Every structure is written in C-alpha cells, then in structure tokens.
Image (cartoon, one colour):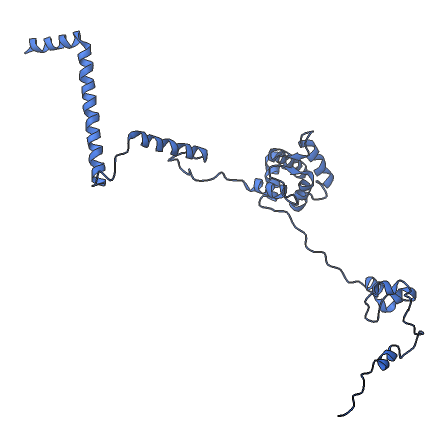
Length: 265
C-alpha cells in the first residue's frame, strides 16, 4: 500500500496540470450545485416556471449598482445607522439664515448684508448701549468681511460674534463669552414692527378741528368738516343768470313746462 500511495504522489507532483484540473472540476461541481439550489428556490416561489423566467446574474448586479449610486447621490450609506437622517442645521445657523433673507426676496440665506447684521444685533440684544454700540457692530462687520464683498458668510458671522463677545463679556474667557452671545441669537427671528397708530393729543386735535378755522381756511370745509375741493379754493363764477341770494332760482322753468290741460269728453 505504501508503495502505491507514494507512486500516486510522485505522479501528481510530476504532473501539476492534473492537480489543477482536479481543483477546477471540484469548483465547477460546487458552482453547478449552487445553481441547482437557486433553481429549486425559484421554482418553489414560482410554480409555473414558464411564466416567471429566471433573472440572469447581470440583472442582480445592475440593481445593486443602481441602489448604491442612489444612496451615494443622497449622501447616505446603505445599511448605516441613521442613513436616512438629513444634515442637521444648528440653531445659530438657522437664525443666521432667517436674518439673511429678511427684506430681500432674492437672498439665498448663505450671505448677510450689513443692514441685516445690524438688525440681528439689535433684535437679539447684542447691542446694549454700553459695551456694544451700533458703531462697534459696523466696525466689526467691516473688519471680518472681504474687501471686495458687501456681505459676510456664516463663518465670518461667527468670527464677528467672537469679536463682539470678547468686548461684551470682558470678565469671562473667550469661549464662555462666545457661548453667551450664541445663546442670545439661537432660535431668534427678525422682529417685524406693527402698524403705527396715531396718538391723540390736545395740540393735534385743536389743529385738525375745522369748526375753529377762520378766514379763507373756514371756506374750504362744509358744516360736517368735509372739504369742498376746488369750490373751497377758487371763486366759482355763477352763470345761472340769477342774482346772488335769489331764493326762487329754477322756479320759472317749472311754471313754463306745465303739462297741458285736457278737455273732458
């Protein structure tokens, strides 16, 4: 027995191609077995095999590729935790965008003008009139923005807030001061002023009371206080043919145009 086994080993070592053929045959048999198993599974799912043809492997690979591309284009990863969660925006950036588009229909929210920057500092109580004034806000805005630009980005916005924070909270460290200023702005929106209402005062009411007007101003209003228009500003010429103060104006036409008398039958 030992002689026969040693002879087989020598033959295999002498002919390496035969060993390769045996390994290939084993691989092909395993692939054939896998194909048979797949066929059985699909046959169980679709009893009528003629109405449900098998899909070639290329279709499965195409589906996987298209799914991967769609997930990559959406900025997500397949199978990852929180893959469908959109990119979160901080409360500070949200307030920045709200003030950036205030009063400008063409604004995108990525850049902020100096006018809206001043309004943000005023509405969010960054300006206190002591440590921070409107002049300080304008100086910091000119300092952080680029020379050729009239707006600031979100990063420049945070740099400007850092400058104001160090001046507003001098006794605190820089990081704590910035955190305090951020809290003043986070979650805030522009304050829209309401309709201005007229305030009644004795002086205004006396000047607008038409019953106390004298001279030519009195002639411009009637008894109810309503303006007469042109008749109160210009002397209108009376072309009716009657003298001024005549009480029976227009009565002559009524007498002349009486209906004719009809004779009784």
